[in-house]
Image 1: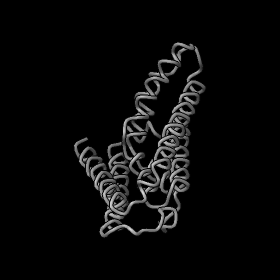
Image 2: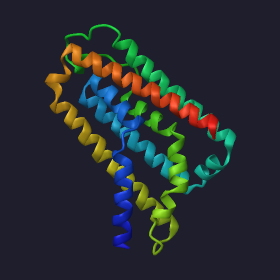
Image 3: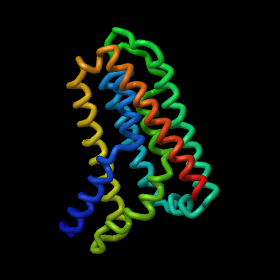
Length: 207
């Protein structure tokens, strides 16, 4: 069983470190409001994973994955939210960035809620939890217990990875506070979020 969990941890670890919408959302929050807000965003993302895990245990994600209409609705909601975040980032970095430290900038919306919503509106998590995650579960354990352990493992890996990423951004604070650097990174993050939004919408229509 230990070998099975080790293999599952490796797969989940690789999936966690691949850059995606969660990392872009965290980057945006770190640039605009500092590491404290970014860490709270990571907390919201982790809570979103735990919520998806609870929905999976209740069987709701399987229904979502099997329903084209429900999946498409969630896909467009998620795509629209990413497009909104990307547009906000581009708008707030349309001119030279202010000289004040990033921690003093006012950003609309709770960072925890931003992380939670961006994760909950990601239909790929539903497909992942109903499709791939069960195949990683150790057969020696009851299905519900094995899935719970894997969800907790995934949430922990995400918390550690994104939390460490925020710490790296914090270490680079003097560089990131330079107006030109913040403007370039802010615009880049906005474009990335919009790209993820369009990609999610296109994938939803092609399903």
